[in-house]
Length: 150
Image (cartoon, rainbow, N blue to C red; front, side, top):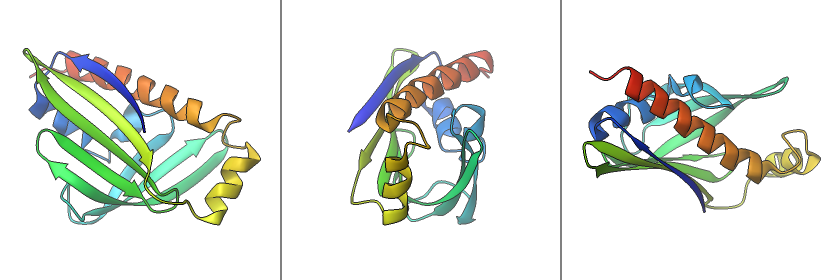
């Protein structure tokens, strides 16, 4: 499992609103460009969504299912194609929130994903790129949450 952590000067409830709004994730993520709920209208265990992604000239959708949803402390979803689970842990930290983003393989990705990753077209060291992306996502989330406090 890989993870990245940041402390944000905003309540867990406020941070929860941001990390569970898959339609806006593209504002913070360097690779995800957003998402659309296809079952349900928001975060709940079993809800499904399509994630939209881009890397250079490549564009692709992913089929995702929420596997953990405990407001305002935990949110996780599994990506069908890559067999990767992505998640968020939110913990109160003084008046703010300690936010952890994590990812781990939960089974074997399909053969098309294996071939794409092996080709290097998504980056020669995909895991390092993903960890860097998590740090960049957290920095952008932090900046947004702290600049838009209610």
